[in-house]
Image 1 (tube, rainbow, N blue to C red):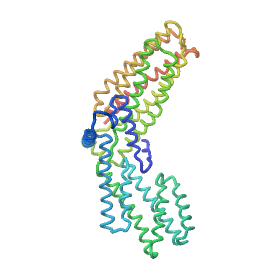
Image 2 (cartoon, rainbow, N blue to C red):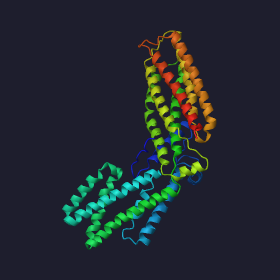
Image 3 (tube, helix red, strand yellow):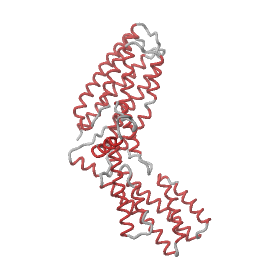
Image 4 (cartoon, helix red, strand yellow):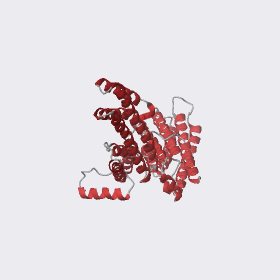
Length: 426
């Protein structure tokens, strides 16, 4: 099992990934929402729809409402404890730290909080040592700043390294304003105490109040990549069937295949986010107790689609090198059969683009049937090509195209095998 990917503190990469994937899904399915200023939709109607999605859905609207509610709860609880219970002079450190801990996954919250407290403690310690040794002059501040910046570059602190300097500056201000050495110690210790309190409350809220579980982000990743491949091949196979392969079309397909690379990276990020969201997450246990099982084969499916993406790219490059006059009628028949294979793969990727972990039992037989159809078309193409065309001639790309077709068919069958094993496993 790969270690969950680390995230940049203070950002919400999972939300960004899901937002980008959601937009692309909408573009491919024709359901992209209208702009806010589109005619026929008043502001009140749009507000009602937004609230309806927030209360009943699981999209970005619901995520926004949940985040606002959890932030309010964490900040209020941290302030209440710091100001009313502990009667701290710098109570704002607690709610500030608590809100920062509401990361997109519980795993991020836990590790972010540990690094954050360590960074703040390091910054305060630097000021404490240099303050007592060298006083509160400008030269001391410069020394504190340089030391904090150096410690902040330690890779173990990650993105929290910047907090070493921030904490050191706050500690310097507190140190200067304090009246005595004992008061300085007390106030600097209070900063660390409040930050640790806020981090603890933030993590606790994130764990106990609707902890984020993003299995669906992996599903979105499969959807976007599969539908993008489907769109490309659905443009290719009619032209190949009808003998309309030309230089401009082949170049356009090659460029579109090259632009699939970023979608592969986004899909991989979505799978990493889905895996990470289950770490330390109590909702993962609850799902199992109520009989719900999250589909665990997304990584293998995305890996297979990534290979398909590269193979389609290689195929389109080979098409740009294909002679236009061909080798008589055998040339046209080869590409007609090749179009039939791409039509079968288009149907397969279209089904894969609708993958739903709650309907896998009914979807997998259709996927496997489509993969078997692609296999039959590939075998027919291979038999015809071996009997009729010069596959070993390096000046003609028939052999390369046949090899790519075979790999595409094998990946389709492999994807079906992965899905079947995942659903069959306990």
